[in-house]
Length: 247
Image (cartoon, rainbow, N blue to C red):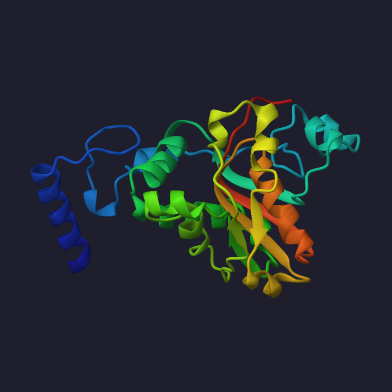
């Protein structure tokens, strides 16, 4: 063990006793508080959405045989072609991943953006490959003021590509998770507009970044504005995705 590792181990031992900090995801005492507010067991428990998945939205498909007969998209994407060209997420919005995102978003644990973004880079590498920039989904100024930060922007800054704030929220909207699926598209219709920075995205491949995708309504509303501003392709990369079951 090197000197730095020994110092860190000693500090962990002291903090474990003095602070008795618990993991923000599972509530167990942290053995290594200096490594952040989430224990290693919880980080390891975050599983990817495994293939087969819809080539467009990233939702699970019921069987490989659908891909073998040329049906590489889920029924929802075949019925109503989304504006977003392709979308992926770290994993399902459940368990430890849900708790981590909740801690980042509502408890102000902004240090969690770094490890979350690392997982997004790893599991969403195909979305970032060849992308010119990342565009975070914006908050309305009233919500941004109340929260103090935009979690999507915190994630976007750590993805390894330039960040362009090409979108603005024109009006406040009800939180999507509080609404039934049928009302989510209506809730965000016309809620976003382009900023003066949107000129930089013309003819480019863009990665739209957010913390959670539910039905994809918010991502589609943002992608429509970006394509109207000249984006060649809009991909989406989120920390989590709500999955209702294999179709």
